[in-house]
Image: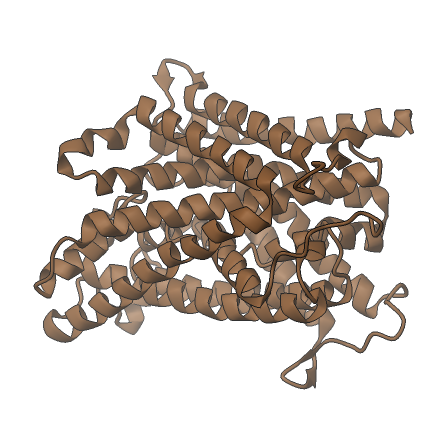
Length: 471
């Protein structure tokens, strides 16, 4: 892979913007806020037990092994080709579920920008399907053109992440000072009391909200001075993500009671309500448009990053050699990008139209299924990440001449970081199987979740068997 020529189009600003867009999705704020004040406690716990270990692991490994494919390469280097393949397969395939769920969120918020006369679009199956398919294939086209062209979408799209968050926090602070809070944050209210299992089950979504710091490590060979640029960009984006999530969650709960939140449009609703409280108007449609822009940019960023995993596997001959083909003009993995578009479109249409019994899957249930499928498949590579950190830093194959990991100048406990992150990841995996609050057809939810997860893993094992016979 070292002989393959990539266009180094990404600098520090691009890496920070791409990481911020790739990590922060404001849709997690209303999803977590459905549990009320205890969401603040779970955000802080997820930050300590999951996000900090993840940031340490990604910064350390990306600075030592800035290779195209990121996590796939680290798992392969630490545990061999078979484990590298399974890690890379799950890392890639989970995104095929992730793109449609992001675009469903974008569709719901774009509808707000159209005004109240188009509110019926919120539950329109035809509108949701058309929106997802159009912007999914827009990502295919932009990423074939490469980062030289497509990086501007993620840079501009970062405005759709931080500006709504800034408005939310600013309006929430003003409203709190003037009128008080719609939600009590007394110490006793920060601990879940009613329907504890459903409340705690959202822990997996909160941890997942902090995931994605490894995005730019997947495109290391397209970053200028990756050993310095990647860790710095990751840290900048990580600090911004923490402020946005915690401050945004508190601001939403200042504005509305948890029971009043609509998950796919809750942020825009909260900003609209807070703006009204302080005598301002017209922010609902603007916020909806910004959130849609941010989600479209996030889809585009992950579409680019994820494609580099099967590309690297194609170079290693553990996936079809066609995956390693580069566009002759734009130097991008165009075959993988087209395959991603086809596969993600089919998965989305299956989730929307698949039914168990007489009840058809609603748009909200399809959204929940795809979100939790993403978490289930995505967090398996994170288990590999934390184990690889131990093996590559403290194990017998540690890279010669590399100093031990240090945080703020002090030697970090690699085992402590890996244990905290690994346990948080494992708990999140188990909680995925608890149906989200409001699920009407539990059997349909579980059948979709388990059946599609087994299908993904089975397809990966079958692909590896075929490729091993060919080699």
